[in-house]
Image 1: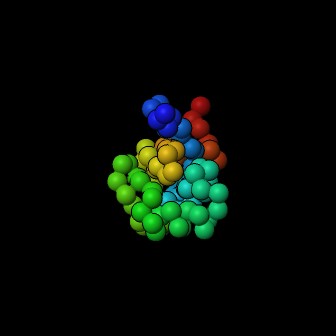
Image 2 (image 1 turned 120 degrees about the vertical axis):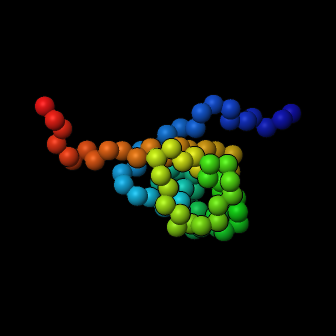
Length: 87
């Protein structure tokens, strides 16, 4: 029996401002600890937009897709919610 594959679009995870790859792995629930995130990145087990990325400090941007251990999440940068809106 083949393992179940994730064929749907990745779940979006909203972040505010700049976030690094290591921070995002933990925040998005792809890694349970910072140590697990660091080890995964250093081992080349993390992909950003389909390419292996070994730079834990890489700054992610809106729309980046991060994959680790068969799960993927899309970065969704939230607009500054504290800024007044025009009315």
